[in-house]
Amino acid sequence: MNADAAGARAAAVALAQSVHEVVERLFADLEPLRVAVEDLYVALPRPRAADLAQLRDVIGTTLAAAPDLVVGAGHVPAGDALADRTRWLEWWTVTSGPPPRRLLPDAGPSEEHLDYTRQPWFTVPARTGARHVTGPYVDYFCTDDYTLTLTVPVRREGRFVGVVGSDVSVANVERLVLPRLRALGPRAALVNDRGRVVVSTSVREATGSIVRSPDVAASWHDDDGPVIRCGDFPLGVLRTREHFPGS
Image (cartoon, rainbow, N blue to C red):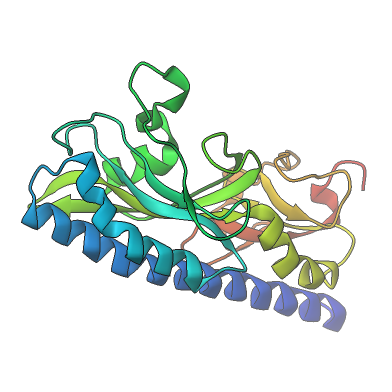
């Protein structure tokens, strides 16, 4: 590896580390909300939807912790967690500017498009018991735009009662990372573990498109592969011209 290539790789590694640190900070910002939700279910094993209003101050604090990135935050309960609802979004947004507003009055089970129990940001933490980053995807629940959603499972006495999470606007991520991506060259991108583009310096690889050649997903855990991973998160920095069709 020549000096130029080594320098470029070092810059990509530094960017991947920076992204990892930002995501870690966003998950840390969710911890007070997770604790508040857990405490609520300890005090009220099967609360009513109206009881979730007790969370609104800490949700507001979560939104204010990273206003440059986060556009939504809240708690989404499991189907059997509440006494009076099977679907409910205690989710607050600032997509249209402050003050925060509640996303929906009720996500009823009869409304197919509001069945969040099939969404990866809900199902993966429920299944694995671990925090998760979903996206980029078009968030039809909240932003109607490309979004990354960070979620953490909440349990009471071992029982899954839902998730807490935050929505991060991809447009905000772009403002944060694009200048450093451009420094890596004309064919660089932040991608997820399926090769789906979060932010790219290439007009051919827009947000949401998939880098297919070669298969980024297949080589995700290869330390010598094309992607420099952002720690243990499903995000990575891609910087190799041949991986972009038409380069």
